[in-house]
Image (cartoon, rainbow, N blue to C red; front, side):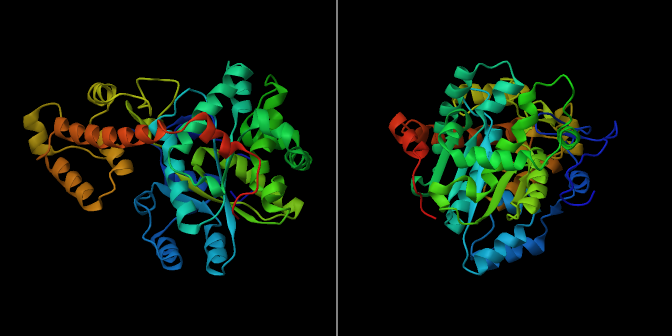
Length: 400
């Protein structure tokens, strides 16, 4: 598929299914991300690009980048060139609130976005699409707004700088910002009903709000949507997101050309798998498939011990002989995401695959790592009061 064409491709029955609402892998090892790159028409992040990133920024690549968790991009080289030339850009990412507490999988794009904000010292826009959840799920407007504010506190606890971070939820903000709605209309005029059906698979029985929603997610990728921040200056945008959100921005990049605005650049992450196996991403709708940010140490331990799919053998004797399979083992996969020490991770991989380390020992390492991460996070989350949250939401000039 040519890059940025706003159409879709028929998916064969034996291929992974990935769209903004459904992620299903056909293999025990999970999504084939190389095939997804070809199908979506993005570019693989290779060693050469990572080396250039490190050279220009003077910073070692984040472990999520080094390990291929952020694996794909669109025009990341444009952003690196801008930084090298001393020019600014801004970051834009978001969250569709569907539960009162976020889970570990939701943290991946935000963890990386926080690092990007620190490395580049650029402003950040975070959109909470509570309107999307009203349209796609059996959620009332009032409940969606409440979840958006709870999730905002979760996000703030990651540590974003309030001086250059603006957070908003659609249900409240769009009515307060005429420029947002004006850009929505400009975007809507550039995309036909047939095109939006082709991109997102909408059917004739879908509610009309779904048809227009993509313009709401697209609008923040243009700096003119936020005149109180950018003073109507044209500023490039980088969107860190999971790969399932890419259809929105293929559309956005096509529209940008017609509006004579810069195409947003993207950097895509893989999915943190569900506890039961890599065929599905962690989901807020299944409490036994996910580790939530408000889970207790006991809950985390029980979930990993009981539900985390193992790559170990049936018996200890067989495991000692054949070793474990880290390609399918969920405890190991979680360590790839959350254990920052490369040498320790390599040692664990070697020990488990050789049969020296048993599944129970691997699960304990995963439990300790995840519990430590969540407890540190919860300590920060406890300090995020309503007053702290409202400062991030306040319509104001932020550092650009």
